[in-house]
Length: 205
Ligand SMILES: [Zn+2]
Ligand SMILES: [Zn+2]
Image (tube, rainbow, N blue to C red; front, top):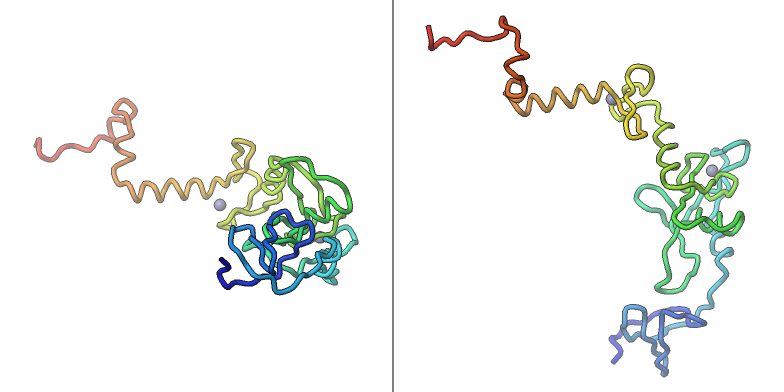
């Protein structure tokens, strides 16, 4: 039986719903809902272009960013359903722009925003790269660590293809020793201690 909910789900060629007749459908979640209107599905490119604003302040190589003014994730990437129907996969507008204007993105690859603007959808600002390359580029683009030490010269330690801040490493070491009193002493081998470092035992005297 219908549960009283209603929907404006688009029915034409929609594999996620079943028509039950009498103005009811079964939706992607298995509920029976009443149809309140038959909205036609508009082409993805039309829905995409409606949510694009050509930026007047953000540029890359002389071309403006196409700012996404629709939904965004918490970290600032746009959200877009190329297939606008209920239950369809949620993707990103920059991925849609890449596939529409440039061509398919290889399986498992992602877009690098060359302009560093996460909600930009200008295909000229996008380059499909592997996750490893994208991560490496993001790492190399950092000039300072999160505590604002410069990531250059002697302060950089390279390990696992990643650059680490030496000042932060020393700071972490000091914080660890402050939390774990006696750790340093336990870790020292007696053979490494110089004789004048051995503290005389007061009880013995
Ligand atoms: Zn851009
Ligand atoms: Zn640091």
